[in-house]
Amino acid sequence: MAKTKSRHRARSTVAILDHRILVRRGLTGIVADSGTHEVLFEAGSAAELFAILQERSDRGQPLPEVIILDILMPEVDSLEVLTQLGERFPECAPFVITDSAEPTHMRLAFEHGARAYALRDLSATAIVTALEALKIHRHFVGPVMVSHLIRAFVTGGQQDPLSMLTEREQDVLRLAALQFGNREIAERLSISEHTVKTHLRHATEKLGVKTRHEAVSLAIQSGMALKPRLVPRLDESSHDSDGPSTPTTNSGIR
Image (cartoon, rainbow, N blue to C red):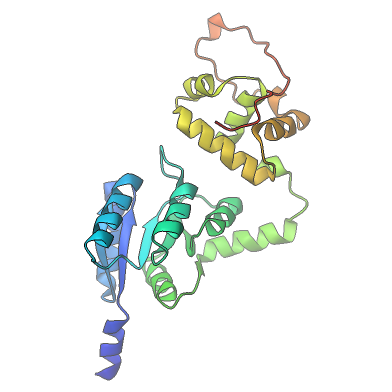
């Protein structure tokens, strides 16, 4: 009996942030079925998450010990969300569950405050194991990501820096190298200007440079700006195929 009571006292409280309601409900079911953890609330956006956390804090209500979220959320800088959680609600341990198997994404997530990182195909049992690890202030990395991490470690130093960028980050950087502004890049890729800025910031971080100009210079040196993989046009008939190939002089991402 004593052991059962101890187990009950070890119950973790969880909040789930995801813009997809089916994902939230699925994770809520897994946590509830564990019998040792409970979901305090769900949030469909970062703004909603912070509003609920602030309200609970103002009312003296307990905050969730773990916040499950994705690092690839639309229209939001997920790394900034992790940073803000660490600064405003350090008692909440961020647990990233995502579709991204990029080792660089995992590294950036941990650098910005994540305590656990796993792919979305993580089993229910493994999710519970991760929650238990977080409960005793340990980090957790999903088994598939461990393999990616080892592979990246072994081949580190031999990898082309630009290969660390996601396809979308490469698309944005390629257009920036062709001297398109943020607004035109956004229109050509059918994304928001905010998302363009986010992709450029992530690209500069991954490339180990500090400015947009430096990132663009690397892209040009690698020949990325000359590659035709994706230089989308709003109107193929009204745009000449040739464009400037010198780096922009803008030193900021915004």
